[in-house]
Length: 239
Image (tube, rainbow, N blue to C red; front, side, top):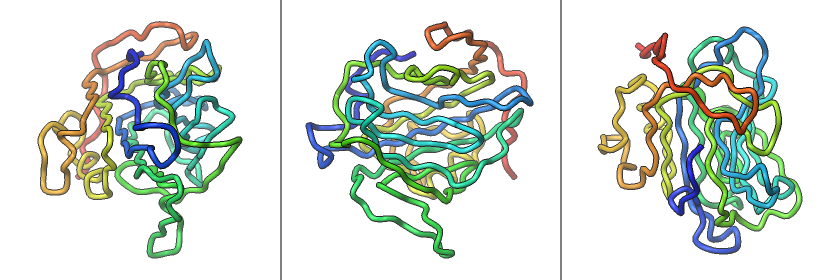
């Protein structure tokens, strides 16, 4: 749980025209062979339904990425079209938003939608085919006073990650491009330094959060504390 800060908010004022780009990246391992639903991150409040800004979560093997106006009833969503293998294996995830929910769809060479409402989702360096959804009245993210949660959803029950998460990176007012995401993934755990620009990466000045910790989430509720332990098995560095 990370205390509220203006660095964690992605808006310059009311209205969706004032939404800012942002990006998250992280390594995650759900350390069980049983099915899990869990949160990657959420800026929101469990005590008030009107403190939501954004979140990402896994449900039935699919990955969801939401933007909110105040409550979970008012949202713009992108989600992967197909489930992926996530149990008892390391995966790298990246979530990007270009700052404009009114952006038209972007397609790959096969005609698959890979960006919708300005949002994209990457798994292990590869941009995913996505679908989209909307609910209520989304009028842009607001600067709420809620905290940022990693590894669970404060707005929903039974979304606590049982497993490991590390190398969490967050950029404000910066959309990672495909090449940058692929470089972060390909370099492997702790090998990519987001504080230094590289040939395909230019986000060092926009980096607001970098958690180089190994967290073992054995949580019985979203209000429980996180116990940090040494990582037993590192993510394999891709060839």
